[in-house]
Amino acid sequence: MSDSLGVPTAGDAAALDFSSALTDKMGIVITQISAERTVATMPVEGNTQPFGLLHGGASAVLAETVGSIAANMHASTMGMMAVGLEISATHHRGLRSGTVTGTAQAVHRGRSTATYEIEILDESGKRVCTSRLTCMFLPDPTKS
Image (cartoon, rainbow, N blue to C red; front, top):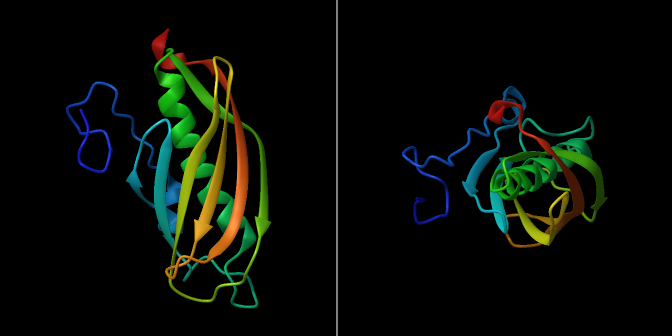
């Protein structure tokens, strides 16, 4: 069972907790979860480099967060868990304020790997970063 945004509800047996100290520190808020598409927002403030621009590493964290959540939703249907195997990020424009939105869209969902393209947009819909994440599946130690 999920709510209108596709986020698993508390009563859902498949609901997984994706919170972490890193996502909390970065201010990442998950707004939609599915194996096909996962979305989250992140403030620029607090996630900048010394020149005041959104840090490329912060964009990579947002990208890996949404991609990994989507991959784990897929992996969980097979009793597996997903871990990052490779990530790339192309930074298209600098940003000094506001909120960015990261959307992971499935490119491939297989039995041993999943690949996602992640676009990060600013509040006006301009692309800030394009990322690609591949995750591999491992046995879920909580299912043993």
